Length: 94
Length: 87
Image 1 (cartoon, chains in turn yellow, cyan):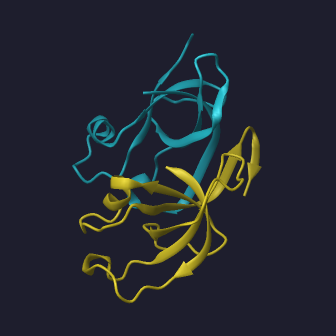
Image 2 (spheres, chains in turn blue, green):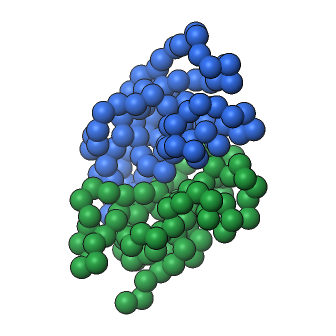
């Protein structure tokens, strides 16, 4: 898992059948100090309640798809959870 | 396995059911000399009671993680802290 920031939402009405009903979000990957780490990506939401502005954890590749098991989805990034508290080097950040 | 140092803790209430009640720690990769390997890091589940500042071993591979946790083939987990390095 890694840290990311939800920066936007995305709607795709035509997608793979198994992805029906999955929420899509734009996510900015973050460094441990919460700086930007690279380009934005699109992720599905396995936490169910993530939205823009949230600090989240996300998983990549096969584990991202498994977050939606038993559905088998063509997904390579998925949000695991919404971070309530993140402490880094003894300092609480958000 | 990856050598790293625990640098942070992550607490989430609203999250995938698999992760509820499991401790998640942020581990930054380290080089053999103990310095950080750039910005590389991973958030891993803690199986050994590791704490901030400790050097740890992280298993970052899905199938072995699922076997260690005894989950079925659909366990959505990849990264585990499996050891604390003494020296």
